Image (tube, rainbow, N blue to C red; front, side):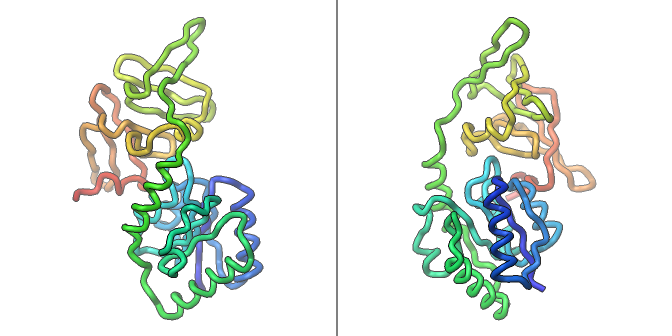
Length: 251
């Protein structure tokens, strides 16, 4: 049995793709549906699917990040609403992409190629160069970056320059913003904040934690292989989930 996961942070495209796959490839088993890149990475490690359908643009960990972290473990098919990302490598069949809204004919073409690769037991291709080029294009189309974050504390408004923030953590209702000198809570969800943060500057290390990369002093690994990080200017140790442990593997 051939297995797959679907990752898309929007409910409707994710459900539409599942429905179309069930219609055009009924023998394919969808073992997980994921709303975030971190969930997709965990699902790949847990289920070891043959194929991962990955939305290119997800907040925090993108589909490209997932493919990079799991390269060689499964075949990747990228979904995107932006046809400028359709590079020559896609058309040449090195890797497949599906332009949203997904057309049945285009999906069938991708399915045919995937079946051929499965039958021939072809390994997943090395996508390093392609992902690098795609990543540059995506970064160039990001929304305007957040420069300041304001937080209401009683009758006071605290102002945080983004380049002074050490990390963000979230709970169900608030996002905690921490700098070296101060901290506060804002009502905006971490997922929305991340859309305005530079992913090369701020790294997601846990579903609810984003840190400034150059504030990381060291990473620790315990006897169970779990990581935590210490930051310059903060006494807190922040946990790293398995999905993001790849950031700290020795070179």
